[in-house]
Amino acid sequence: MPALFGKNLDEDAAFVSKLWSELNKKTVANVGPAQNPSEDHFKPWDCLKICSLCDSNSFDIEEMEYRKGDLITDPYQLNSIQHLLLNEGSLITENMPIDQSEWPVMVDIKHRRQDAISSFQEGRALLSTSPFLDELYSNLIEFVVPLDRDKPSGYDSSLARGVIFRTFPEGRTGLLAGFQLAHGLGHQVGMSLFSIDSIFDSDPEKEIFYEVRHDIRTAEHAFVSATALAFMTIFSRSIYGDRARPFISDDHVSGYAEHLPDALSAAVRSLRNGCVLTQFGEKTVNGMASLIY
Amino acid sequence: MAKSEKEKQRIEKRIKNSELKALLEKVDPEYVQKTVIRKSSSHAKA
Image (tube, chains in turn brown, green):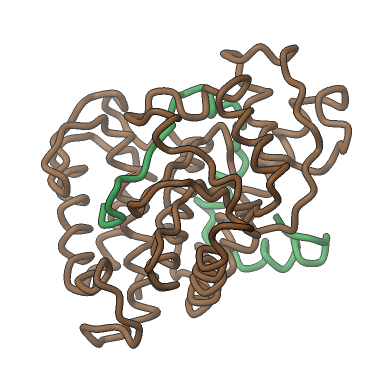
């Protein structure tokens, strides 16, 4: 039976949900009431506030009202997030090979791109075909921020835990949006595992060959990428079943059913060949391998 | 995050593995200092 950490995906979902519950509770406690007046209510920007690299005195972030798991469409809120990313929260995208000006927040999505909002909603609904992904999305994800870019893309940061930054390109289906959300959720879960284990006995910053992209990246980057692939594979199985094609046609994702198992195999090989894993790291990578069949 | 205490207890009961339970005792929110800031690619295939 496939499983990432425990005996089955049901135990895995409970484990990650509990992990995040503890993580968010401790983050709020570390921030303190002066920095988080809502006391027991975790906000993604709290991660920035406990980061010693940030000047917590410079923060002036208003309380954001949102429905958990929703796509943010309010222009005022989106402008505030854009401002945050360019100023106090610039660390969120630091070290990413992107320029904020090229991947801006889509502040006018409500007026310009109702189709993107529909794609998000369809993608979220498709995610619920997997009980594992549905439970984790519901418990972990605070909100999704739309980005203004033509290509399917996005980023995720441990300094904005629970936020998925993604594009919803014009003319694409909810199926692509579902894969985008599964990918972001996988990144977020992969990053959060470093809060309980070092994952590597070897240097996590060691650069290794990542066979999926044929590039060189750090071991920890490869691990987070592999987790995202594992989550996409789980989503693919829940939608496609044993079929090679989905019911919904979308050129960008048409080959995923065939491609994902090979990509995940390559990611697992890269980690096994390039790093020395801890016991938990090994268990997790073996769990990823168990998804390939 | 679980919305109620009852829901939290229900989640905890589903975790049988003692190794996983032990790991949950080690949760350190300061891990965010260790970079792990990642981007997704322009193609969601990896």
